[in-house]
Length: 225
Ligand SMILES: Cc1cc2nc3c(=O)[nH]c(=O)nc-3n(C[C@H](O)[C@H](O)[C@H](O)COP(=O)(O)O)c2cc1C
Image (tube, rainbow, N blue to C red; front, top):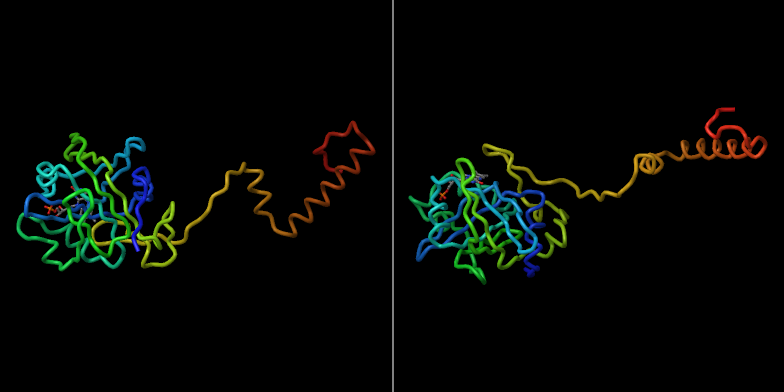
């Protein structure tokens, strides 16, 4: 089941930086390219970016069509992701060649790929030259997620609903467990982390301190008896 999210949620889908497949359509041509240089850029208006080298067929597709989709693959698309990152759409229609099932986007002509966990449909807002790549700035038009994969954050409940992360060459990884952080000072965190034995010792020490302080109010509180 897919569900729609507010456009402002697009930036969260990109945390913590999953690998993506950028899909594009220009007239009858479609293309798909693995991209890991994606970045959330603005909350309001919702903008996301992808850095693309001018040698990529995707570069021209983006320039001409002025729209694109960011697909966030699951591990089911591990090999497809690598394929779209090592072949060029100038020579072959990668979506047809891989037999990747796709469905139409609601706001862009670019196809959305099945087997993904999230999709961000974008209109091209701006193109900035950044060194040897260009940053294509996308205005988020629609955001979709698989419900069992994402609910405010990536849920990571099991391997099939974890986004893929790119390590380099042909290596990828899945995130492990989700950890919940608490805002704590070092002292509070230390108290939380103490064992039952340590707590007992601390409580005894504090009781002794209180007793001595009552007997001698002049005594500094941290002085050992
Ligand atoms: C996992 C992965 C991530 C990649 N990320 C990017 C990227 O962010 N930007 C880019 O320009 N190329 C990136 N590449 C390289 C392109 O995907 C590759 O050159 C591809 O063949 C271009 O396809 P195209 O010519 O059909 O556009 C990546 C490759 C892989 C395997």
